[in-house]
Image (cartoon, rainbow, N blue to C red; front, side, top):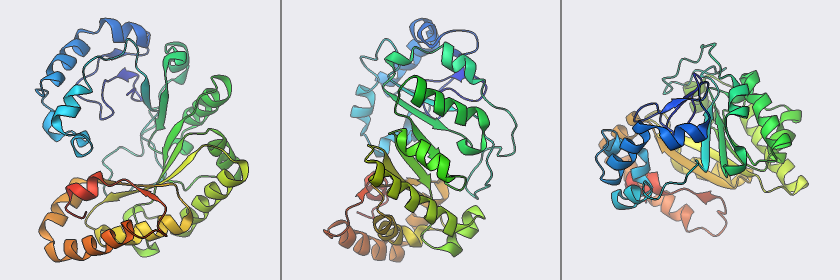
Length: 296
């Protein structure tokens, strides 16, 4: 992870500590010489990092597999997430970022201080990347000049026809944070226009099919108290829209809320199980968080 201040981390959650600055050194130099990285690897391989017990990756990998991922690390990162800034045109109720921030990553250093030929997976995030000019420019540079597939995380509200085509031609995973299955719930969470998001998702799906690209349209749903009742409805909606993937995640409040709502969980589990086994439901559902919550 490279954050908007140019600090380099070995984790997408900016943990456990910064390894160096992309403004001062190349990523190759940081990766080869950082004593903090060596310490983090040693602690990770033993499950001893202070952030290890709360790592969201535990819901995808068990502790043994998670520790194994820290061994035999490559000489240069194969996966890079670039957080270009916290600025966002939305203020979702579960978001803790400073969405009014005007601090943006100087992407010129990202271009020149990373050997992109060694990078296999790239994720651009914000804030809202389509509200951050340097993020948009970096996306176009990576996809056009470096010929890279680029994944993005976006709320989907600023996708113009022009940018819909840029994104789909970028061949990456386009994760659109919807976090609701109805306009009312969306309004409470995001204070935005639900119909615009739905239309933009339809636009991406249609473009992908027409252009025959390998991009992945991913509907994302962060579970919180205000939308937990719509988890099953989100599966139906993502499937009806023609999305490729439906990804679930948790805010802390969502996990705690579901733990207290046994009747709701039983109802959700019955419906989700039915949908998962329905041959008409073709959207690929990421099940790790649902399983952890006892909904599968």
